[in-house]
Length: 89
Image (cartoon, rainbow, N blue to C red; front, side, top):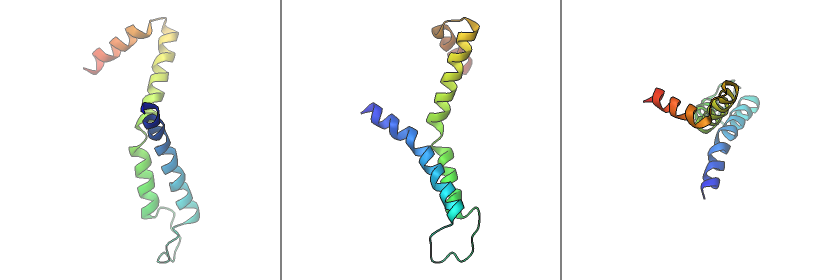
């Protein structure tokens, strides 16, 4: 169950980004839209949803960067996590 939720969390941002790019590239398919604008309200909404759902990706990149910096500094990962926890509180 947890892995399914995690997969959905990671899938949301790229899907919204693809929808935004498609909407910008091909325009809205609405009958009412006579002109082609680059940033229509729908593409703006998709970009905003991409930003809202980017949190799992940002956490993943942050964790990988921390692990890489811990390996380079020679410090143990547990020590680095406790140091980060102290900084955040």
